[in-house]
Length: 143
Image 1 (cartoon, rainbow, N blue to C red):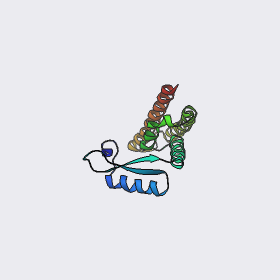
Image 2: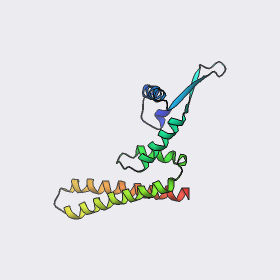
Image 3: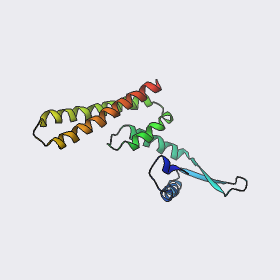
Image 4: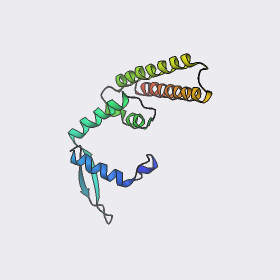
C-alpha cells in the first residue's frame, strides 16, 4: 500500500512479485481479518527468504550502478547485516576505483572531445563522489 509514493512501481507488479516470492518459498502469507475491513494478507520472510535477503543486500552494497535506487534500498535495510561496516568499506574501495578510472579518463581526453561529452564524463564523476560521501556517512552512522 502506498509503495508508489517512494518507488515508481505499479500495485499489480507488487502483487505479482509477492506471488513469485511465495512460490520460491522466500515468504509466506497469512490472512488476517480486522473488524469490518476486507481480509488482508500479512507476509513474513522464511529462513530461506532471510538468507536470500541478506545475500541480496550484500550484493547490492558491493556493486555500483549509476542508477542508485538499488543501493538506496539496501542502505535502508543495512541493520539486517552482521558486519555492514566491512561491506561499506569494500564499497568505498570499489567507488574509489571507479573515481580513479574516471579521473584518468578526464586527464587523457583533455580537450580532444566536445564540451558536452566532457561535461557528461564530469557528471559521472560527481555521481561517484556523491556515492563516496554517502557511503562514508553510513559508515560513520553505524560506528
